[in-house]
Length: 269
Figure 1 (cartoon, rainbow, N blue to C red):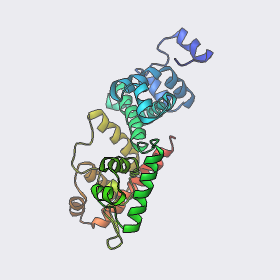
Figure 2: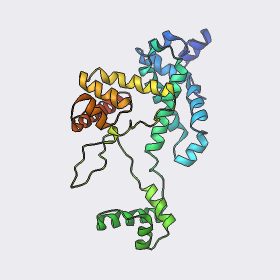
Figure 3: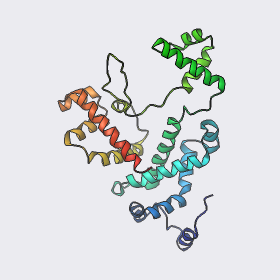
Figure 4: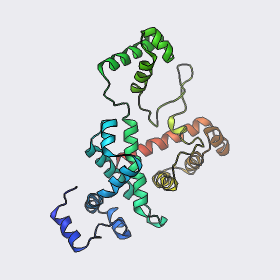
């Protein structure tokens, strides 16, 4: 249970809904008054834990499985709450709590996903990962798991587990499908809208739209059109054809968008 300051206790005693996020005026105040926003985050902490329990899992299990402390989960939830306030558009007529749940869950899930390789492997597993990396370096490519098992005289199951633990995190601006003969021109940001059902629900889509809106204002008309095509599910080739530009140009625009999104996120960290 979070301990409130005397000032917060006093306000709540006078008016139980003083920090209610169902009040549009409070949301507007949060967007311009960071001290009030901080107080609202503390008072509405139950929304964070509700989001965690309902959509991610019990904190005790997350601590055990992902080696993450409960306080870290709370801080991530607070960051999601903070971003939800900054991105929330009152004119859409959506309830803030529903909108915030998406941002909170997204923030925590992204951290758990990106830190999934930060597992505490045993000394034996660490040694096997090192040997696999050395084998890949010596051979110039990574053999199939069953081949690695034969070459290193290890069980294939152990090799598969080591490959999962040693797998690195992928970033939006990381090149894909490249080698020395074929320099990359496509990054992961170019592939995230491949026509698949990426967003889980309408609120999640609205959160993405709100974040992208802040980026669109800094793009040229053509760049904004390219971004819209990609968000609508058109691939790089289709987008290039519709805008009568090269695929390389589409790739450069999407890399620019990725960079702007990263910079936008850093402002709130």
